[in-house]
Amino acid sequence: MNTNATAQNAASEIKVWDPLVSIFHWSLVASFTVAYLTGEDESRLHELTGYVVIGLVLFRIVWGFVGTKYARFSDFVYRPATVMGYAKDLLRGKTQRYLGHNPLGGIMVLALLASLLATGITGYLLQEAEEGSMALTMPASMTNTVNFVSNTFADADDNGHEDGNEVLKEIHELFANFALLLVIAHVVGVIAGGLMHRENLVRAMITGRKQL
View (cartoon, rainbow, N blue to C red):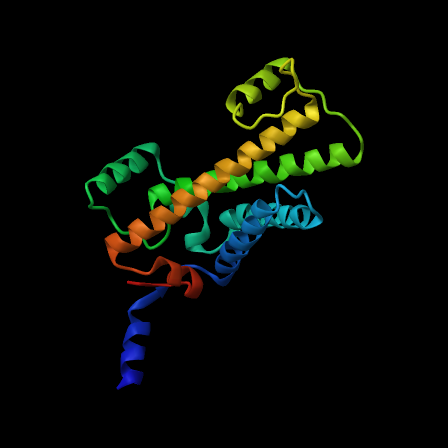
């Protein structure tokens, strides 16, 4: 009896996420968590997990062009009108179900990849500048902009000036915090989508399978 039920459940499911997408997803969750929590320490562990994040993001970008059907950007990058229509339907509590990423989810993937890549690159540049005892020079306009956006945690001197290294550090932290906000929004979206369509999206990202 249990065997028949299991067979019926398997027959009603479809493979959506390939193993590489699942491995990428959970590896990114772990590496970003460690990198963010060790950010204040500026430890070797922070640097290494930062490199892992960069590598994972670069892999996902490549896989977005050559990977399996639902992993490709062409499957979940929609026109702005489609995204706006989906957002309106979401507010009304009635949305079309997508086997892959929905239009808002597709935007979230792109935003996360971009912010994580920017965080990793700025972190790498900052590390190179500090280890090489090389003070980066930033245009005054960029310094003023970063000071304005990050005035809640900027580390400026009495005259309100920062050197290039300090400005780059603030940019790095801005991208890291923005990525964290996107992660929180992503989790909320997963919970909302799962409840709306009555499916376990976390399980789907582990097994790679979804109900038809």
